[in-house]
Amino acid sequence: KSNYILGKEVEVLEKKLENFTGAKYAITCSSGTDALLLALMAMDLQPGDEVITTPFTWISTGEMIALLKAKPVFVDIEPDTYNINANLIEKAITKKTKIIMPVSLFGQPGDIDVIQSIANKYKLKVIIDGAQSFGSTYKNKKDSNLGDISITSFYPSKPLGCYGDGGAIFTNTINYAKKLKILRIHGQTKRNYHKYIGIGGRLDTIQAAILLSKLEYFSSELINRQKVAEYYSKNLSDILKIPIVRKDRASTWAQYTIRVKKRDTFQKILKKKGIPTSVFYPVPLHLQECFKYLNYKKGDF
Image 1 (cartoon, rainbow, N blue to C red):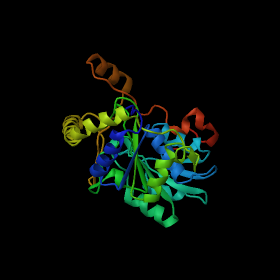
Image 2 (image 1 turned 90 degrees about the vertical axis):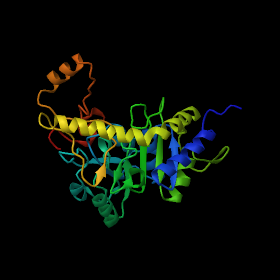
Image 3 (image 1 turned 30 degrees about the vertical axis):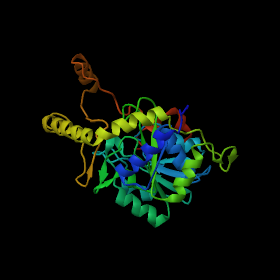
Image 4 (image 1 turned 60 degrees about the vertical axis):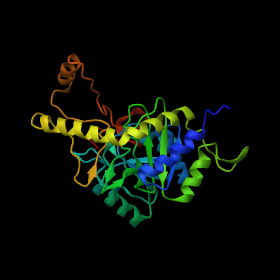
């Protein structure tokens, strides 16, 4: 029997992801980007609404807000963790603000307690962009349990990656879970009956099968990543700026991100030694051409 999309393995994977994270509902989808889009759609984001997020992240974060004709509002980052500076969020809130969307950059969750208390105060929703941080923890809670909805990506280079594109959305709210499952199949409640405008956001069965195999080894992989990161930190801390992880959280080390004075020279030397490097991110979101209409300028953050 042909079983290419949303097959049995997808259901099994969703159950196993729920067990691993402790989240009540795991809904797989076609990519981390679609996970963000679906999360925003589930919260009924409307044109003109505002979403507070960080300018220092991959394009998807701001892009999906803009795709729905809502407005990304950027807030500066902490200079040591590179995550959104939670203490600056309140100043950016307006009557149009609907959602706060922090990114757990390079694998480490942001200051969620502060963010959540601001959200509660202003009756805002929180979506965690955990595309890089699946398996990380904040105060011993898995990152998939943070916020109203949390998303992740299974892009091949992510901590838990499949052999193509894939993603997942986590929530402890049944109404979101029900709506997300409908939205990912074109807003369909039963075959040929469409309740919402949705998208084709399903996960391929073959990717689910791959993720099921890899999930078995994932906990031990996280331990190994931690060991490598500790080794780097111990040996590099005297010569360059190493990443900082706050005491109350654990990173998945999606990247080990360093800051050096002469970057180009440094990269050339490493390349000769066969060590690949990449710049994250050469152009922050507020300076991207597609966001020119937001009127940010260099030096705003």
